Length: 150
Image (cartoon, rainbow, N blue to C red; front, side, top):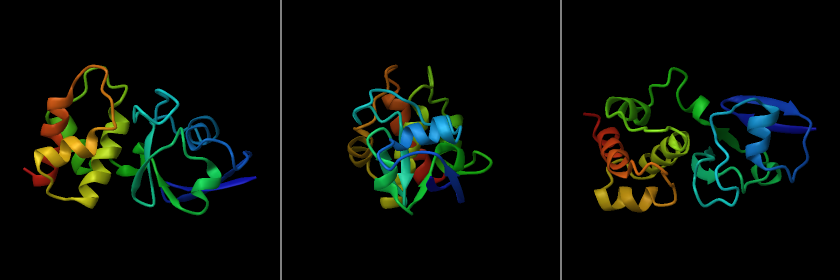
């Protein structure tokens, strides 16, 4: 029996410690906002927070998480109004949308660590997240907007 503290709730389900967090979230807990992209931690589509830090859930096991708090895109803000989510909507960032939950989770973690990043710090902080549609300019603009609140 696995126990996971996700989005503020303790959940129990059948899984072993070596189960990737992504599979537990998607298959066992039906939290499908985190996406499977590359499976090797290079694209960022599966990004979630573990104790507030952005991690690639395809490369993080349940054993790695232990009792830590996991936050998925579904738990970032109950109403979907985290400043990053608002900026994403205001600037119409997504094109296909596949990578966007990972992009948003990475951006939210970046702004927690650095509330007022420069454009170069945004580029550096988001560099591990791939957007197949090339929406990088809008992503940087949205992170900047979320950091200023205006």
